[in-house]
Image (cartoon, rainbow, N blue to C red; front, side, top):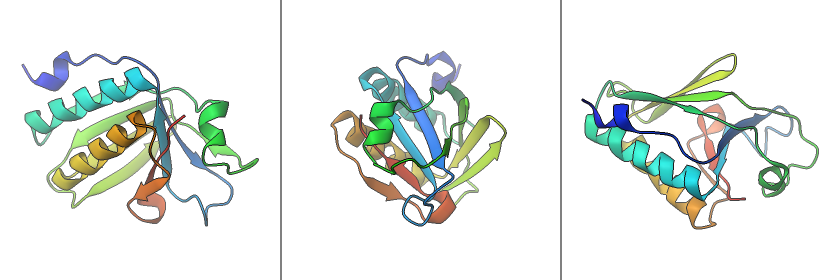
Length: 144
């Protein structure tokens, strides 16, 4: 049995993207509580061990007012999917976002798994305010 299949989600993870002020806040934004960070780290480790083809879906929560206050994108409107499917895909150079309604999918290349993992470590330590990737493919890491 794959390690990612026995993983269980704990805590709160939020993922959103802004509809306004895209020049300063392009791409996706992620935040999580301590339990959500620990859970995501366990999942990313399991997916990395399972290798190409490994996939798992997280239930997401809308961003809290505290999370939205950190980037301080004022009254910008935002959209948040209900789920995030992480998939290890050796054919992707870094990562690739796909969105279908309330479901976001992040296809992770080998290097991307490490970058995402480091971002979650930073969130857990109260660090962030940076992005990995460019434009619509960017992912911003926020604490709060």
